[in-house]
Structures are given as C-alpha cells and as structure tokens.
Image (cartoon, rainbow, N blue to C red; front, top):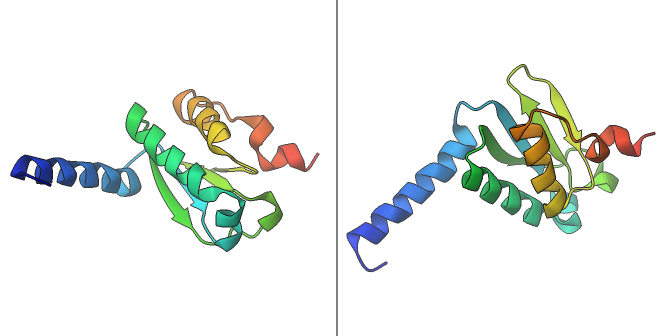
Length: 121
C-alpha cells in the first residue's frame, strides 16, 4: 500500500467479499471445507465460486462449513434457494463450479449431472 487510495480500494474489496457472504441474496452456496473436502480439492472450488460470483455479480452468498458427512463425494457444494430448498452438488472441481453457477444461479436450472442424485442411480 502506497496511498490512501490503495487503502480505500482494499477496503472496498473487503466490503464486497463480506456482502457476498452475508447479503440478502437469492441463493446461498455452502462449500464443505473440512479436512476431507480440502484434501479432495475444495479450496480451488471455493476460490472459483467466490471469484466468479464477484465477477458476474450473481445474487448469492458463498460460505464454507465443516464436514457435510459424505467424504467419498467431496468436494461437496450445497445450494440453498430463498425457500430453503437444497441442491447438493458432489465431486466438484473448479470447471464444474463455473458450470453450476451459470446453470443454477444465473439460469435457474439445476445442473443434474453434478448432483448427488447423479451418483446414486
């Protein structure tokens, strides 16, 4: 940081990240970040979700949680809508995370091939 303007820019970035986590949005995205999720690659998934939501201005918050309980299906991402309906995406990676955002959050269509139902057939 070299100036007050740099500090103000940093503050604005932090505020945007905080709003993304706590705002009144259409969706809440929760990423399992327990040891099992991190070992399976959840950190790049979380980072991609945060970056893409900020880049495109999607109406959703992104948070993390501990173990979701299905370690063999990690990384797991749960999407909650305003009505409280939950969709569970499993075996996620950054590319699937982007596709999920485009389909589910932007277009309102669940990305069926990445949900828990797709692996339980």
